[in-house]
Image 1 (tube, rainbow, N blue to C red):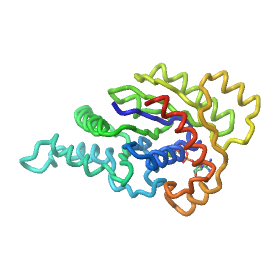
Image 2 (image 1 turned 45 degrees about the horizontal axis):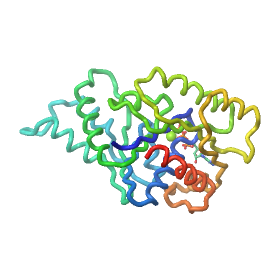
Image 3 (image 1 turned 120 degrees about the vertical axis):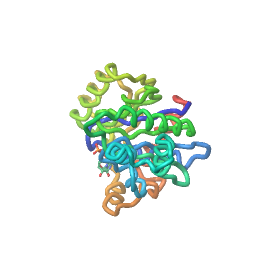
Image 4 (image 1 turned 180 degrees about the horizontal axis):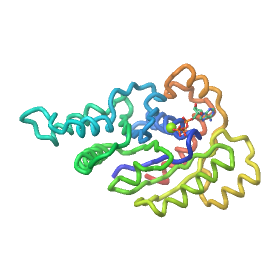
Length: 254
Ligand SMILES: Nc1ncnc2c1ncn2[C@@H]1O[C@H](COP(=O)(O)OP(=O)(O)OP(=O)(O)O)[C@@H](O)[C@H]1O
Ligand SMILES: [Mg+2]
């Protein structure tokens, strides 16, 4: 079964950046087939990885719901949806990307959702690792029928507000239909030494810090130049931090 690494954290703290750097890590290692899933309706993981997104799973769902009779004549609707799903998968030389896109509108989506979820799960089985870049509410994760995450990486910036958001997500996990095997805290844009107040709050929340990422000017530069984070130098501070984290995390989930 594939190992699932998922991101959580409040808006803007660096979930997509870390997701891109984890994808980068796997793409530099052999025998690590990875499916990256962008589960944020404002999807931008693809952009961060320099990939162009034309269509999302959400587009398939909405188009199908708008015109359920639009299935080409003589074609079974399940086969038709499967064909469309294959068009949505973006294949890169070292990993693949699936963009979930917009969330569903009004109406009964059960049938189409069931079919699409089944395809997604069949597709996922082909990969050793799945990486899920989530929206803050983690709707996508809670809707999965498999309901398992091997490690939930909770990202915060160096601020008590970000950290408390992680605390709330951590408390909410019990209400979700989700088994989270391991949890790790990532402190993004962190100074060299974390303050006592911050560390006390970390301890109260009870999720161990697995990574501290310093401010990395290259990220800003790449963002402005719309360059893929896959092209960052190996010694860029954020890359070094995430690579070190992954070396620690992989044995925990393998
Ligand atoms: N360590 C860092 N150093 C410098 N800039 C950073 C760092 N981490 C993230 N950023 C920048 O912060 C911004 C927000 O990061 P990102 O998009 O990864 O956050 P997010 O949690 O995915 O946001 P959202 O909730 O909107 O999806 C980006 O412009 C990114 O380049
Ligand atoms: Mg994001």
